[in-house]
Length: 75
View (cartoon, rainbow, N blue to C red):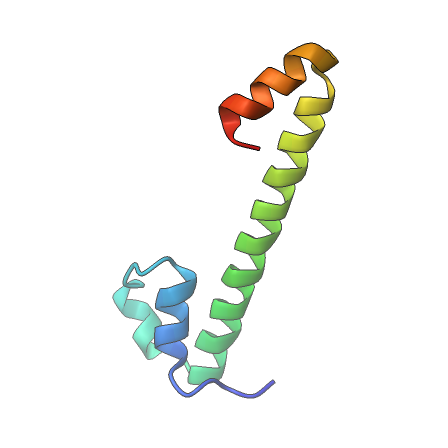
């Protein structure tokens, strides 16, 4: 896997703009790039699981109530 031009910036982006701990600076760029990719993948998977969970929860509601809940949630 190619290392991005600035893996530390990629890691900050994956962390939502939060500065990683100081010890991360001691890691090799390839390791930091792998860490950034793993965090980004985990966040995407978490967002997908949360969306699927929300959809499943809506299906458990009775249909007339589901319409109102969707309107309130803006779905």
